[in-house]
Length: 438
Image (cartoon, rainbow, N blue to C red; front, top):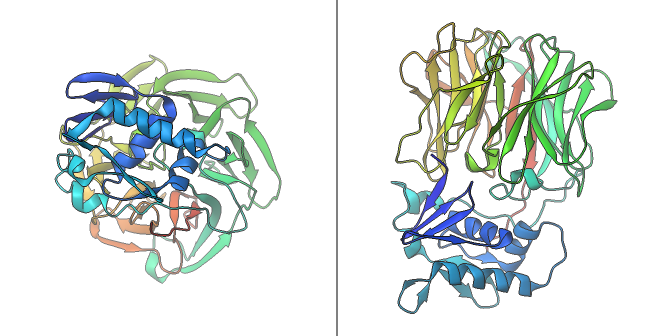
């Protein structure tokens, strides 16, 4: 199953970038499709011309006539929702919106109520680091600036997080966007993706206690989501392509990288899916990721993919953000349950990493619950929750999910958490929006 937005008589297939209008396949130019997706995710909400131009063309300077032409292409492809009424409404001197009636039959029980909770940022906040999520996150991630922070928890988090001595410390502050940080098994270094301004995302390594970094994967295209193997000798990551991603493993000693398999791009598996994108099995012989709606396990030796989860037919998005417990017995992941909401689910696995029963609900709070990260004690997880442009850091004891609480004094605007092997430090990306109502 591929992610699809279902409107009144229209299906928008995100991965194939195909439009189905009353059963008839349509094709849209690349920019026009991106604009349609953004409008369809925010029905009834007026988006300014500046917002749409920035979203579709990034930092390029283009004439507003390009937007006018793209909207005309969308209208021609979609036709009319009713005689004399287009799906896309022009708001004079402001911008455009998808008429609310078009969303009345979206494939979600809470579509109208939830979608209104997606305010759209118009410009990037003036903070020390500037930039925006790059091409690997378009079309569903909007402009954001990322700074990685360290969160120290003393005494160890496993004793009682709420009483820990917590301090939030800037860990990197490079120009551009820093994302998907991950600790090495020995806790001595981190891997992260860094997109310099107007450049692609590459993977870098940083040793704790040192200010220097070194490039690990560069070259053309975007790379993201680095994950250290259990033995610390290799890193798995995603190389983002135009329509799909490649799962790649590269040795830390500079050996030849291996392209293992192709999966769906992370920006279509869950709105603003922040990762983790790849998780290793405990024995280092398998990789877990999201692909075409399901969480899957790839056996490196046999090069076979096994489907671990199956998304309910009522959902148009995808299971995402897999995180495997230290003993390999429990997989936690994010599952969309309505537009604007995703819950955390858990799946028990046997020693062969085969599912033991179906996934069960772990925690939900009416917001986006995502980016789960295990504490090394195997009893606690960190995750982020809130609306998708202002998430914050939470923790819970998996033995008592109702114990979930925000991390005190830290963790605002947080995504992509990673816990150190010693359990006393958490890395996460902090992002910022500046928004105004249109």
